[in-house]
Length: 499
Image (tube, rainbow, N blue to C red):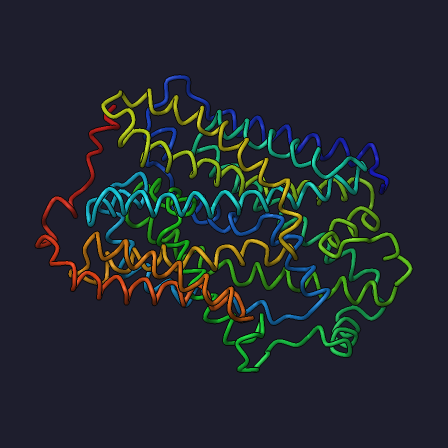
């Protein structure tokens, strides 16, 4: 167990208290569905854009990215280049569509374009994927609590999950967005502190960091191998990055729900742009932390003797090298990152289940406040589910790729469904379902039969789903004639969620 001073404990407790008070301050006893799930569609582009970036800055990134560089090199950074590459596609095709439909979930559009069964399949895939993402995000700070307290990781997971679930249940989407903004700022301050303290302990500063990392191979930026087995070759990371970026921005309710809360089309568009501009430098900065920490411990090897898990190298440095008080702040930053992901994820999971399943088919026709109450109950339930899943996250491998591996399997079929909806008028519901099954099967076959990098799975799943779905649609009959002015593309009035 590493010593955590009383001052650090007070700093951490104060931060958690502030987050709880901020999140719960948005509580409204008689919230409507729009207020609870979408913040009344009143949010500006700056908090929405920052909150989306915060969704990528869980402990998976804060701890995982530096740990990966510490142990390997910089080649994984190319995955993040996908965000600015796909931004023009999102802005040109998806933002205009989503902005004029006034959706609660993106999967509503799929019912209007295809059928209820397609909507359910896509929403179900999202819930499977996002629940695992949140579970991995909880596991990261649980490692930190374990280092501090010596408590079993399982107990730390339960404590983390309960705390974040409670304030999300009270505050709804406004709590998710505004706490994410504060958490993003805290994370950036924490990262800056780590860099400053680590560099202060390296005689010669940045030139020495470069020399040490270069000699050890940590500065390697390109793996130009054409072998499909290479996990982080340039081609695997770029291809995987494009699909792993386009997928969330177009199909992931946890991202889209915040965009749907925007008060105007302009805010919607600017939020996407802000996210694309911020994510690359932020992840690059985290990779820089890994480089600096490697050089620091290369020069002070005795200081690393108590570390037993490379994924914990960032909190280990914080708890052993940062001055009293600062350590508490940076630990709070790690908590911040994962709480932002958990609150957004649980909120999105609840919205998808409530809107796509409960309000659509189980209990339609109730008033809006009824669905807001169901949403609060659902938030508690999903919080329990993802917290239990987090107990198994330690078996998923390196923290930096634990979620990417699962995402690569599921994002392909999901993205393929939406591309069939947006990019062709010929696809029909039956063809889409056949294509989705084929896309999932193709990924499983490649996984079972090869050692290919999982970064290719997204492309394989997307292309297979689209091609098979389109061809199956040709065989299974023409869909209804679609007209851009038809009700399928008109603003959604949500008769089941009327206030």
